[in-house]
Length: 267
Image (cartoon, rainbow, N blue to C red; front, side):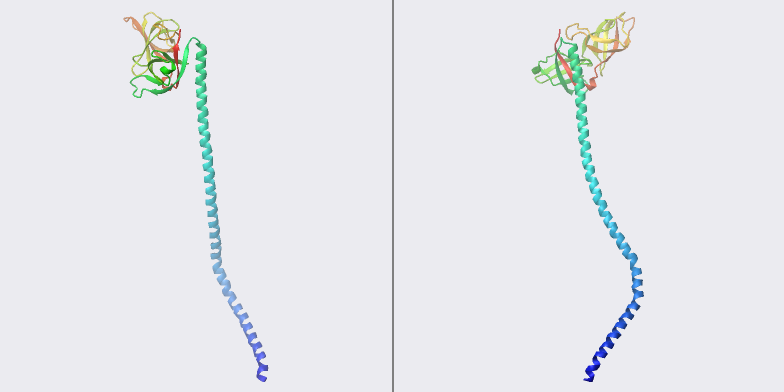
């Protein structure tokens, strides 16, 4: 009985000793915890900073993808606007050409005209000709004059059902009866090898000056009268020769021909 009564006292003493030792151990370990905390604090900060950087990198790539997507959409819009602008510009140029043709038709009501587009050129540049998209099926025949609102282009030399070949006045085999507008001096405008035209067989004594306009004379009946051919840029004359001649700059820009008119009938 006395042994059982002593047990609770011993247990209490043991618990007291354990509590005391625990407090002492905690007190003793506190400096160690502080040191460990100080040692690991920079590491913790580094890990936090690294985590934040990874988060920022993820946001950067996400923003980059968003910007790339927006840029692609903007580029598509720019491309569409460029194409639309080109179409509008082409329509404007075509309208200008059509208005010029209409003005030419109104100024020459006696001409029967057929409009045509240029669909081919001589690739070798040995012959000065173009191919147009109107032929015998459209009432086009060999010998018919071809013009623009700026002046004489040439004449039809070959026809097919839906196309024709046009010899330009700049070809060396081309010749057109012509006159100088101011003095009414007559001659023949011929093409030169390599392009360009010259008015030959002008009688000596006839007045021809730089800047004079050269027109078709209508002689021979191959071309109507008063079609503009070009402008005199130089005059060559020698007293010992029967004729003088003049260099002529055509009013038609042959390198930029896109649309022409065929005169199918004239008085």
